[in-house]
Image (tube, rainbow, N blue to C red; front, top):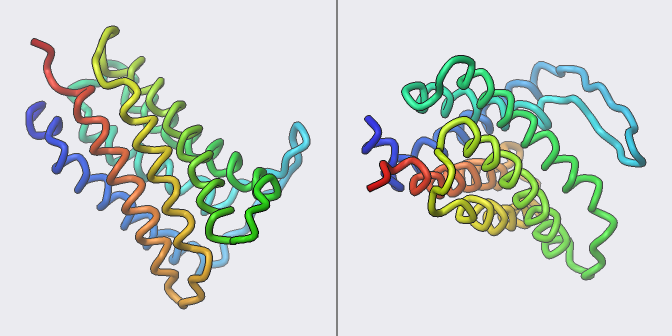
Length: 192
């Protein structure tokens, strides 16, 4: 199982599946009109809503199950919550930074926000992954942060998507989660 999980393509496909499930669940949450809880904290605006919690917790649930042989004790629960919290913080890093970028292009502004969110979320989840799964001294520790940051630029695709099903968000979630998951593969390979 460890060899299969360590495969870049397999990890990427699991991540893309996770992102696709997120997209479906967000549509279901939107159609059912789940209420949001908004609050201010440290000068920023925050919301507990389907869009701020579902993506991280879905990724965390799927990969906590896939990593079950690597996670000891409450490690699966820890990974689940780490993923949810990392996404929540990353989402709000992006949403609270929207006014920082003044490129004159909505797409470029969203790409910058997405890269920021990708870096923040990737740093947090990679630290948790290293603490919960990988032993110290593992090669490839920066790869998930770089990959997650660059994949955050996919947020630019959502700039002009006015379709009913918001197809660009499918590309965003499946793409980001697939790329980030694939970048974890080197951390999970058995060391020589």
